[in-house]
Length: 214
Length: 214
Image (tube, rainbow over all chains, first blue to last red; front, side, top):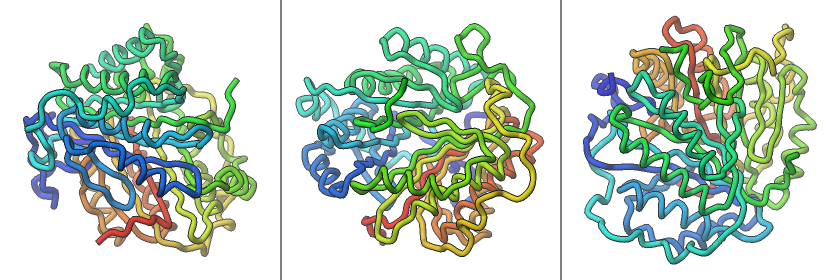
């Protein structure tokens, strides 16, 4: 089933889709940064300037940007971009979609020759602020994926991220470092799974929300 | 399999999740509106004031809002909110997640007694502007869901929405009315499917993007 099915609209030989699947360790994250201010372009460009994206393949269109490469470098670049874009008091959100293993994926568009430490650690380490996050995990190609979802839920609980169930998603919250690290660990867990060949993790993170919760 | 599996982290009796599934026709859309301007609160509140949400159950937290009820009323309210929030020249995005049939869903939190015409048509009919959109459809509980994805791709092509494949999603574009109507039709197609008991449709729509594409 895994070789035929694809949640991201991309795997059929009779359709004009290029991908034929790849066993290469290409992870990716498609994301959009939303600073809710007139200065959103300056904030995004400023954050980009501070972020080393040389360890990922990158493409931007009018809706979003995608980074592709090895998971630690993809996660490092996305985390750096968000933290580098942070300004006290400015409400900002990041909508993201991690994915790996789509049977319709292509083996190109990545930078798999990179090794060593992630290049952005020094730009975000030691920076802390609270964030809200919601996520929905879709492990594909396995009949028992509820077990993986359960593992991930408990992992959030163990990390003190206070998971709660809301319609269609899970809410967590905590320090920005912990939330980004958790999302990467969810992906790493899926990577290590023997039953999940393809997963998608949709998430939204925001800071400085004007909406107060009880 | 469909009774056990759930992509939205909510269906296991041994976890602290309330849902036990429902056969009721409860559709939902979790979404966030992102006007990229200092006036984002005024724009969101102003759009809400113009939008009749009395036909849907609604809940807002610090990250997003969810509307639940019958699909046509949920779709009507989300479309109205976006179009009512539109201002010429203001870059704005809507991140959304339609879903129906999660085995972990609850039978409450909806307004299924509503009938008749959708209440917001007069607030958005005749309003036209171009939008960009990306979407990713996840039909769950069926081994052949690539067939549904294919149908949806061709449906976009038939409607002149110019679908193209990007990593992890499908891009479409066109008039705001056509794009919202298409997303609702995708959900209606999933509802009518005999093989899909549970689907999720993630999408992002934006207007007035400063990023020019070739």
